[in-house]
Amino acid sequence: MQNPKILLPLDFSEAAPFTIKAAKKMAQLLGGTITPFHAYLPVADIYSPGAYGIETSSLQANDPEQMEEIYTQNLKETIEEKLPPELVADFLVRVGKPDQAITAAAEAFDLIIMGTHGRSGFSRFLMGSTSDKVLRTAHTPVLVVNKEQQIQHLERIMVTTDFSDNAKAAFPIALQIAEKCGAKIELIHVLNFNASNTNAPDESVEKQRRQRLQATAKEYFHALGNRVETRLIRSTHSPHEAIINDNLNNPHDLIVMATVGRTGLKYLMMGGTASRVVQHTKSPVLSVNPKNVAD
Image (cartoon, rainbow, N blue to C red; front, side, top):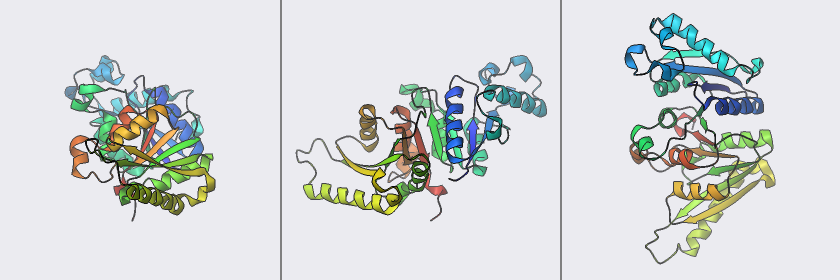
């Protein structure tokens, strides 16, 4: 991810400052450029025009050219004094559902940086947020931030693996970021076992997993030297719960993980580990869709 083209979706909400700050940090770190983006639905398709940050009177004309001009101006005002002009490549406005428009536009970009409003509980499960949907469908890496999950500095990066080929898709991006900012990487694997089973995992199994972790670190992160460590998390919880619990007591500056590991269809039906980690950790999460990585 050298000199990445960064897509920055904005909905003019309270999350915008945190998203813009993260985009600025990553663009400066990786030598990238930023394209602020907004998608809107025609007036006939929405309940409340004001929800999109524009006055109702402005929307009533519903003229595509006028709408693009209005929303482009809003984008410019939103990033004003927050982003150096030399980092801004262009402004994009598209018509359509936000998640679908973001996913389509992102095909021409290397990284999506977007915010989440931190909605939790049943309403989030029932409706899903735009960031959730983009995580599931975009073939471009997605960095999700909010008020609690901000990019402050990048000194400690967690990278997760279940030893699948899909999980490895996130390794090159994590390595590039660590090399650029001199960060340490902690390669994590969750060894899950059934709590109802009185027998803990066999020592030979644990030893084998630790050895495999070390071999993976040596193969994919040897360029970092002593700045890469491995850690096995033994847990009776699911992988996403184990990672979340670990993060609450030991937050990293960034978590990098693949959106799909060994979950397959179950991911699409219930939400994968990456999506759930994004919802509940203290750290910002960079997810990588393995389908977008060349073999």
